[in-house]
Length: 432
Ligand SMILES: Nc1ncnc2c1ncn2[C@@H]1O[C@H](COP(=O)(O)OP(=O)(O)OP(=O)(O)O)[C@@H](O)[C@H]1O
Image (cartoon, rainbow, N blue to C red; front, side, top):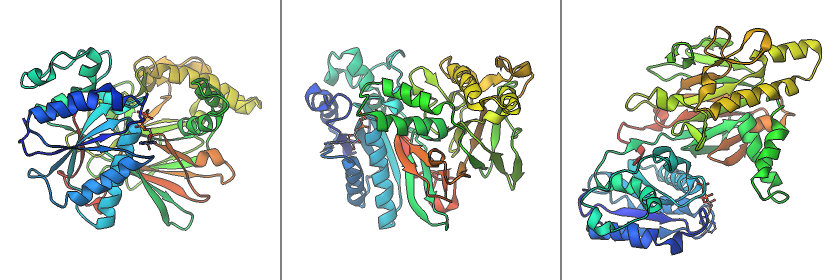
């Protein structure tokens, strides 16, 4: 049990998800009640507007100059992934602004949002419920399975389980002249190409198509698009850049790169899919895009990301379509559906290899690998055609950003660069 004087900050986004937080009783009847019964003080902060979780994060940094006894700032994030994202962004901005040390932040997820990707990664809705710690049972009373699932991260925190690292990726948007216009943090997913373009187009379609069909429409608009760019994968200081080998189901030295310099791996475009993540193998409960995060766990303290890439010109059927003068985008669309369909089969796509003569893909056959899956400390995404607007879009945890013409996006896991001044004891952790 944490020491009784260990304060918790409880952030509540009242409009997240269905907007039911204020009336559901989850905060007052369960979270606050539980903390109070254990003699743990809580500061409840309710967000009042868009981005207000960032303001709360900043305020906590300022207040924290009075550091908690064990150096850990504990925060219950009551909201969805957007609330957690804004909060982390606010903390990092304040730390930079004030020139103070980041320190150690340990988060409890309280899934009041819509997708709640972070919470459901750790507590999938269909998984067996965590046993309720005996010391908490009297204060909890009878709770429904939904409340039980929602409180699971808090149960771990209050039973003194060790939180797991929550690696943050920082993306610098760099202009043609090398100046950085913005540094964007994310804790779930960072993408360009198809994933970013779908989110961008579906935002534009929201008014006409408020329902989920707008994602399908946006996918159809982008599945044939080739995104002109070049990529550099940045090596981890100890481990370099590694690539997944479907035949041995292990990380090996990169084997599909166009060139390599000082450990950096270069890939020429065009690309159709490019997505990195440090925390979640799945974007939806059944869409497992980065299964290696789970099947090949990182070492303790390792600051790397898994990157999933599709490059259409690696497909023999696409090369043939180009040689024949037929529509390569249409040819690719069929392949993309086949490959991404594998993600719905528990992440099978990372094992696909091209079949003979451009036919259907095979599982770990003798042909070339279809999906290029890497583990690296970061990457540089450099669009190579200024007139191709969609290749300039970057999506960080669902928020969209534009790379300036002639510019690039440089992403790295916080703590992997010396300039981060991170120590093994600084950064974000989460109970899950
Ligand atoms: N009081 C408020 N009024 C209006 N908007 C708010 C308020 N508080 C927070 N917000 C905004 O609510 C938005 C949604 O929050 P969040 O992303 O956590 O929920 P969600 O979209 O339902 O869940 P998820 O991201 O998990 O799908 C955020 O963009 C945030 O800026």
